[in-house]
Length: 360
Ligand SMILES: *Cc1c(COP(=O)(O)O)cnc(C)c1O
Image: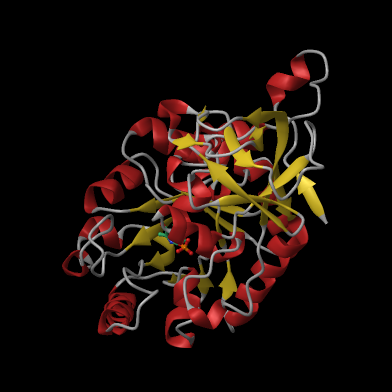
């Protein structure tokens, strides 16, 4: 079943919106199946879910309830600003904030809403304790050098004073077979002996495929939930989740010499019929998807002509003379293929999905 993202609050305030000319479909059954598959692959560990960045661009309001109903009980966001959109859907579950606490306001907010900070430094540990303490997670940096305490800080009194639920670290290269993975797991294991904690967590999506040395107590998949395949081992397990479709706004007849779009980057060399489609780079259909790429109507490939505009793109309708304004075209969002075409990572392919697309 493909469900479209719900209509935003702004729309509810006025008269009902007319139907959109662009659709982001989230295959909820595939999303649920992906979480269950990753939970199963996590072995004796439970899978949580990374739902930061509005569920990697797919919309928290759409995805979080599906993950909750599938059985997920631990949700990770990056910013405090992301908490309300998640916590509203998961009463009783745990929402963790990866950036941790940097000031009193964040500590107060965390306690008021019952979200759990991931403490990332000795300073954050001291701040959390002096403002009242309570359950938290603790990030140990084992080599990615972004956030987290150093292994040498494990014995610090500020760290010793924390009530740590998840003692966690993050793999830098889980999508590769590198000695660094094992080294990071070993550093986390050593810190686990020194720091009192409830549970251990290390693996992201790719880390789950590395096996039970990495899955520990709680895993934190993100990308693979939403259809990304970071390692071959997951290729047969993960189902695509995203479906994007855009409507033809207008069909036009070109004569030889006519240019299409900004800078006339395409020039017709014969009479041809083209269609202007309601999708542009503001929707995440970046300019890298210009010539050489295509939209589809059923099995018919409709090459893109000229530059992608902010809200529109023009396609060649030579193979589809029957198409008219109002017809829907499929916008390929096969993350792996599209990532190659755009020279973007699969993570970027998801997170560039435009805010406009999510709202409609
Ligand atoms: C984003 C993130 C994840 C999820 O990673 P994926 O590669 O998308 O599965 C897990 N843990 C942390 C700390 C993260 O920042």
